[in-house]
Image 1 (cartoon, rainbow, N blue to C red):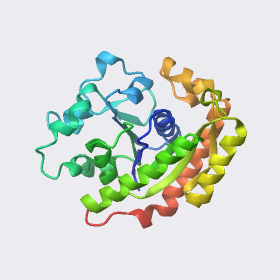
Image 2 (image 1 turned 45 degrees about the vertical axis):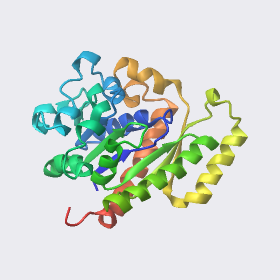
Image 3 (image 1 turned 60 degrees about the horizontal axis):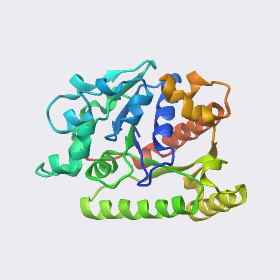
Length: 269
């Protein structure tokens, strides 16, 4: 198991933060990691220190056949972590890929030849159900869903399940869930008291059981400050609560990859 998108069709759930820190954390542990920024805002790329005027060439150039993967991939300041940047060109992906044969498989065709180059490929997806999200689901071995402990976010997880079901029925392929991770626990900006958050977390565990990671990611200002310094949480605040919790989450992710790798392995792909 190698290709893992971080997906939620609702914004503001900590998706990019989760992707960047998972990718960096795995690289710090000696893994060869590729992060694909599949969001037109390029937030993951910016968080890793790429400026707005340096986002090109981006993953859009590869998807649209303008450049090869080798011409587009770049290294980052984190040893072992490579990056395919996002860019505004991705906003036109539905139109640009409209005439492409089996367009839902475009990303899979790009990644298949380079799978063995990396131990893990993480994909930061935009908060939408566009053709790019479908591409990520089709290319993936499994995916992770970050969710805030609010009732609206809980409804979003249910909606995402319907999207995956529709992709599986329409395209014939869609990855299973590797895990659901609860983010921004205790954050005051949601206006939800701890009791309500606890109820939502309990409901998640009741409905999804072992699919929910044991680790809870609490709100920590360091997570918002780190991107401004072009650093991941392990570099910016190694002794913070967030760094400790992300380390625990990475433990769980690695354990699930090892445990389910053969079960989720694709054949004849």
